[in-house]
Image 1: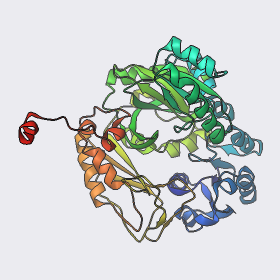
Image 2: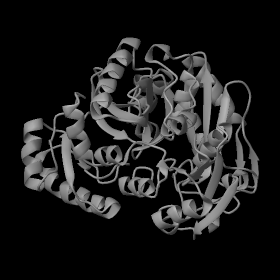
Image 3: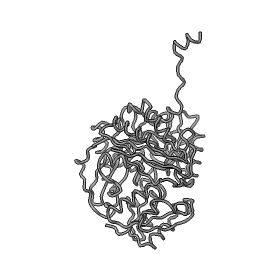
Length: 460
């Protein structure tokens, strides 16, 4: 086991990694920008070191500052958390070159899955189902038009080097392709430094289903079922649950077998998440793979009883998986609400000082957060304040518990999206489990009510 781990992140995930290290008897080093000097991960770590000013590019996205901190403190491993440099293959390679262990998959795995076109090619060769579309980067808008005609409209243009909805455009007919190709490519170039695009058929009523993979360095690999991540706004997830209401035990078994076969073929190690798009007929297609711990990992932990952060560290240290696939059976239902510092109506960011704070508790309630009374939510970083995770024996109990917990949650001094979460949890399509990635748009922009016979009489 490692002696000292440097946590190359901030916020709730830094605290989550720190706690896993403590329980393994591993010393911790917290890094922080000047803006995060009063953060809880800084307070609770064995050592803390400032790596730069508030802006991410000068601190958490600065490889030299992070590696210097690891060198100065004598760390023998580095955990990247999620976001920032967690899926940067060059950074992972730099960590390994320094003689430290990068707690995650090998750099070549990160590099392979980091480029969407290369990932699609690898997924196809490994036997994962793909949506019809381009089998490589598009040369130009003309090629996009030609392939779109073959695939059939609607199609979606995507950035080859990125995600999160940036450089992504839906085209419903040929007249849109050329303009949207140029727009999407420009967005991708600005966001990722690479304007390359690819194209695939667009699913009108998609569900976003992802499968959690855990693999050691000895050839053992399991999956921990699926998470439903269809509640999204502008491709940013807001609520996740496990198991998915749309996945039957038979489908879960099939998806798992297909995924594990593919991961064995490419030799994947550590944790990772395969993201699928599922259509209205239950057919699923590979979208991408995230080679890091996911924000929504707690719902899987609650349902399957495995600490994924502890497992990440153990496996990176060369230890073997303690679980077999036969032991992986869902034991509960779990829902996660991402509590963000933002206006619940306009979704505008709402940084500032928290003047009053009370988090919910009770049976089946977990809160992963770095927040406390007088904590200052910084304007420089992601708006995530907390993750509220509730678990029940079944979905109905989990839904009731989630609403109860949201009603208990008090965060004063800033605006949060808690009121919006309540709207989602009471929306008929969500409570029925019959929703897709359009649900947030449906809540925010409900169709105009049709004129009823009664209204016609009243207006006569």
